[in-house]
Every structure is written in C-alpha cells, then in structure tokens.
Image 1 (cartoon, rainbow, N blue to C red):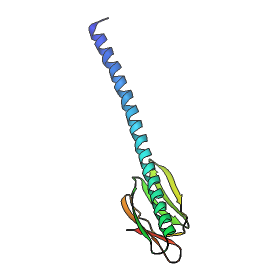
Image 2 (image 1 turned 90 degrees about the vertical axis):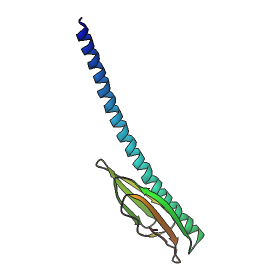
Image 3 (image 1 turned 30 degrees about the vertical axis):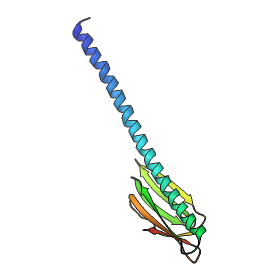
Image 4 (image 1 turned 135 degrees about the vertical axis):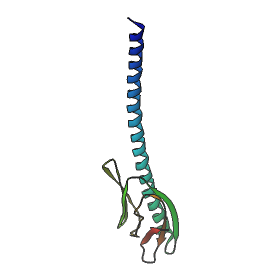
Length: 133
C-alpha cells in the first residue's frame, strides 16, 4: 500500500464520521427544540388554569397575574367552558395542550407567540375572566 492511499482512506473515514455525527446532532437538536416547545405550551396552560382556580377559590373580586410563554409554532389559544387549549404546530405536526379548570372561564387569551402576562379575575357571576394583563 502506498502512503498516499493510506492518507486518502484515513481522510475518507474521518469524513464519514463527521457526516454521521452532523446528522445525529441535527436530529437531536430538532427533537430537543420540539420537546422544549411542548414543555413551554404545557407549562403555559397549567399556569393559567392554576391562576383561574386560585381566584375562583378566593371568590369574587380576586385577581391574579401569571406570566407565560406561548412557544414558537404557536397557532391559537382558546377558552371554552372550563377548558383552555393551546395549539402549536412544529414542522407540520399540530399538537393540542388542553387544561381544565374548576371554574367556568370567559375572556380571551393572546393570539401570538411570546411572553404574555395573563390576568385572572373572579367575577360576581361565578365565572373567572382571563385576559391579557
């Protein structure tokens, strides 16, 4: 075997190793990013429902503010009855993150990604109003 051939084969082996590692790192980064967005969405709906349940338990006139992050891929946030739902779409895959409150809910939630301050207010009617604060 010639020295040049050995050097070329060594370079090719290292090249294949680098390509393989690049693919693995790209896949792991994508999966971690998706998992992070899912965790942010779940944390957001959980925090909003906890605030709603707290003011509901304290009674009319009670208010609580909570800061949440609606992650990248955010599509919408809805309130229906005792439930809220946050929908995100990452790489063409839509995921819903529902949460259920003890109280009947009313109001509107922000419709954009990013950091939001949400105000939960217990109303005289027994409803809990959610709005951007």
